[in-house]
Image 1 (tube, rainbow, N blue to C red):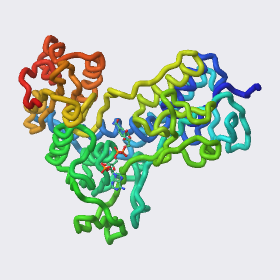
Image 2 (cartoon, rainbow, N blue to C red; image 1 turned 120 degrees about the vertical axis):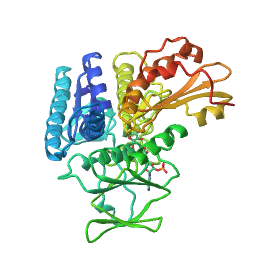
Image 3 (cartoon, rainbow, N blue to C red; image 1 turned 60 degrees about the horizontal axis):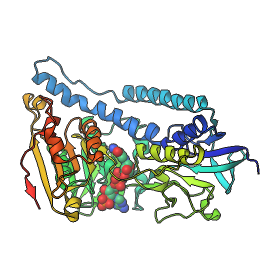
Image 4 (cartoon, rainbow, N blue to C red; image 1 turned 30 degrees about the horizontal axis):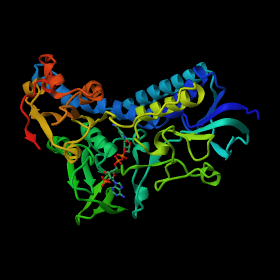
Length: 452
Ligand code: NDP
């Protein structure tokens, strides 16, 4: 049987774009890709990239305060949100065009429209066109989930955060995960009076307890009102804003309520169930180690599979798929030991096991140091950096590393290399410090603070 294309990719985000490019450019495949929104997907258009630029924007007031402490005659002045937003939009346009250029350069045919799967070897575009394909890759990502509470329509999600007409005066962020915590810090940094409600005991569940406690304390000391054990029961219009009636009995008013209560896979309405593709409890496409679904010609990568929902993971899954199917190199992507960073202020970088998870597996040694870094200590800021290593007593291998502080994302990327290679604590100790830095603490912690 002949097909119009060898591969049809649905979704032009991180995973889909990588798979399409490798299949076409390195696998010699005839590839088409459909994207109903903007090329680049969540990460580029409404996620990591604009978020990180907002983080940068929000860090300046503290940096300007530091500059004054260092002797500079400067004032922060006011923040021009609309100027920032215009520059941000231009930057996203540039990136989107770069994605298009890369795909076109690789010979991928782009369809700026929605595609749904019609049968195991065919997709139907919203334009009515039917395209047959030897393989179909579902890379449709995810979308924000907002619980069904009364007044939920008064809240916005991270999708809308980048298009606000103006910055609010008072904001409530609901949730305690990556997105909620990052936006709480961004809003606070931009001068918004920020409150965060989280239903659990401590924000950033799943991260090392000491590290997330460190982040939460720093956020609170900076002035973010974090209310743990608190959830919104209903939202209603108040006289001067949106009133959030909460489980702690309070009814506070805000100008903006941001829900960051998780994301769900974009798998509905694609025609998957009818074909026998299995979906999980949250709607995730169930795949094997090679990202293949129960229908052999259909694969899925990235957030729609709800494995580890991070851009670099989607990219690696997409690459492994293309290697397997179009380059004759069967490749499983290993989901263990993935380093990641939460761009709160201070940042949290993490790789490997938390202290709590490591202890469940056997006796460990914990090396941990909290200290005031030179740059901000000089400026009189109270912030402390946390450096932490978890070591397996028997093998001496470093099982986990957790860093809280400026540049933690950059540092953890490098720490992930030796830890992935199986480095021992003695390998770290043998490494000569780079002085004066914060990261030198990783190779100079001599005595465990806890064992067992
Ligand atoms: P997370 O799953 O990280 O956090 C969701 C938060 O919402 C949790 O605190 C959860 O509470 C809470 N929650 C869930 N359901 C409800 C509910 N019904 N009512 C009240 N609270 C609720 O999701 P995010 O949206 O923050 O992020 C989605 C994913 O995006 C992340 O998992 C991450 O993989 C990725 N991401 C990565 C970033 C990075 O690498 N820096 C940045 C942003 C996103 P509980 O803990 O009790 O379940």
